[in-house]
Image (cartoon, rainbow, N blue to C red; front, side, top):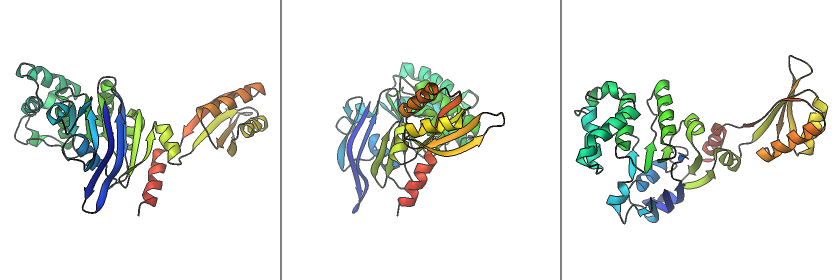
Length: 310
């Protein structure tokens, strides 16, 4: 759905974005992450056609954003970091204006507004002026405006900023409802949102992509290790199985209900390695009550990036 290749943006002598590639598959949610100043918002502005790149190409649904701007932008829904609402317009008026701006036929505007009012749960405020809305409701109106023309690609820059926990859960539910029909490029600092919603990640640092892939692949690329956690009834045999599979013992703790023992192992932990450990334990007659692969938090990766940034 989105194919951006070799994006470059210069400000003076500095490359704010330097050779960035972005690929978002149709119907998927891609998290776009990185420390402050990494170039995320600049990249998003290029993708949606607000700011021209100095080099590179951007295609949405096969359309070049800069060679065919009107048609390409009609495929894009865009929520910038600061929600652009008209303060004196009522919510439904603002959404209707957004629909017409994006080329929705006059006869379909009312239906389109009703659809996004329901999607974003704006029924209670649809006739209120935008200026009296809370921060959370303003953000939800911005998301509704980005969705009102049923875009093929939805680009969101910090969409959960200012939302309370209940509204964050609503946003997660909305993203889930869009999967399969709308591609989403989501820039956020809330890593819990990434864990809950994203199929793939792209991590930017100092204008360059430093990791890309599934959340598990990105952790490995950024040096965040996974661990194997298990509860077994025979610690010596379990530790021998771990050593056989190339893992090392990190911690062993007796459980309250003997003979069970909680064991944590580290090393090159992958689903394949977990499977080999399970086979070795079964072969050696070790009873297993739990065998889980636990990923290190993404926060650890971003802490490392922050420490490396001059």
